[in-house]
Length: 117
Image (cartoon, rainbow, N blue to C red; front, side, top):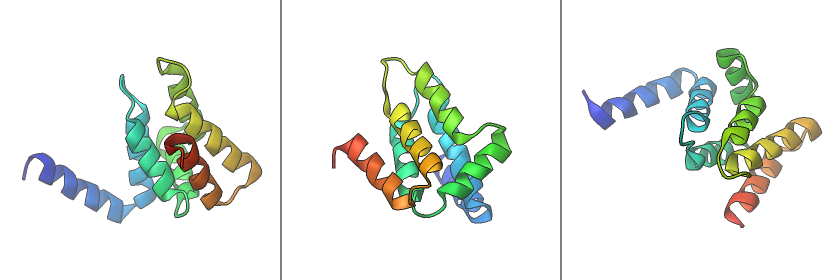
């Protein structure tokens, strides 16, 4: 196998083995590098907010030695052009963590702030 099929199959296997670790890795990939992938960050944060965001945060800390909040914050500071989607996500994740908001509140906050819905 090669190309996109191989990538898809590897993603499926990783997700089946440990979904929080898979999404932690995807979040790490989406916020690192020269051109952060805002769509991936938003998709994962919104889709997993009600499911297993706490588990993903724990896996991110275990895998990379840095909290997801700090990773997103550092990425936001490094982003060119000021306030980006990363900083919005970090703000919402911070509120979620500090105030113990329900997952749906985080999801709704991200959707409103990013998509204006």
